[in-house]
Length: 46
View (spheres, rainbow, N blue to C red):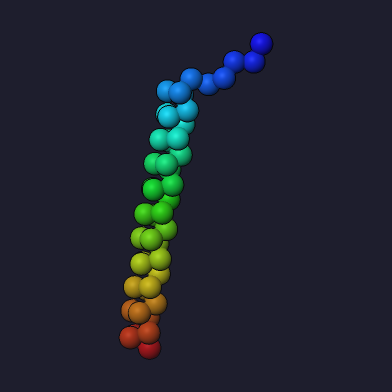
Protein backbone atom coordinates (compact mmCIF):
# COMPACT_ATOMS: atom_id res chain seq x y z
CA UNK A 1 0.00 0.00 0.00
CA UNK A 2 1.29 3.45 -0.92
CA UNK A 3 1.16 5.89 1.95
CA UNK A 4 1.21 9.64 1.45
CA UNK A 5 3.33 12.11 3.34
CA UNK A 6 1.80 13.74 6.37
CA UNK A 7 0.95 17.43 6.18
CA UNK A 8 3.70 18.15 8.70
CA UNK A 9 6.28 16.43 6.47
CA UNK A 10 5.08 18.43 3.48
CA UNK A 11 5.29 21.66 5.48
CA UNK A 12 8.81 20.81 6.67
CA UNK A 13 9.93 20.05 3.11
CA UNK A 14 8.41 23.31 1.85
CA UNK A 15 10.10 25.28 4.66
CA UNK A 16 13.49 23.74 3.87
CA UNK A 17 13.20 24.49 0.16
CA UNK A 18 11.94 28.02 0.87
CA UNK A 19 14.86 28.71 3.23
CA UNK A 20 17.31 27.36 0.65
CA UNK A 21 15.81 29.66 -1.96
CA UNK A 22 16.06 32.69 0.30
CA UNK A 23 19.68 31.91 1.18
CA UNK A 24 20.66 31.37 -2.46
CA UNK A 25 18.97 34.64 -3.46
CA UNK A 26 20.84 36.54 -0.74
CA UNK A 27 24.13 34.90 -1.73
CA UNK A 28 23.61 35.74 -5.40
CA UNK A 29 22.75 39.36 -4.57
CA UNK A 30 25.89 39.69 -2.39
CA UNK A 31 27.98 38.16 -5.17
CA UNK A 32 26.54 40.54 -7.78
CA UNK A 33 27.16 43.48 -5.45
CA UNK A 34 30.73 42.33 -4.92
CA UNK A 35 31.35 41.98 -8.67
CA UNK A 36 29.89 45.44 -9.30
CA UNK A 37 32.10 46.90 -6.57
CA UNK A 38 35.19 45.19 -8.00
CA UNK A 39 34.33 46.41 -11.51
CA UNK A 40 33.80 49.97 -10.31
CA UNK A 41 37.07 49.88 -8.37
CA UNK A 42 38.97 48.51 -11.38
CA UNK A 43 37.47 51.17 -13.66
CA UNK A 44 38.60 53.94 -11.30
CA UNK A 45 42.11 52.47 -11.04
CA UNK A 46 42.65 52.40 -14.81
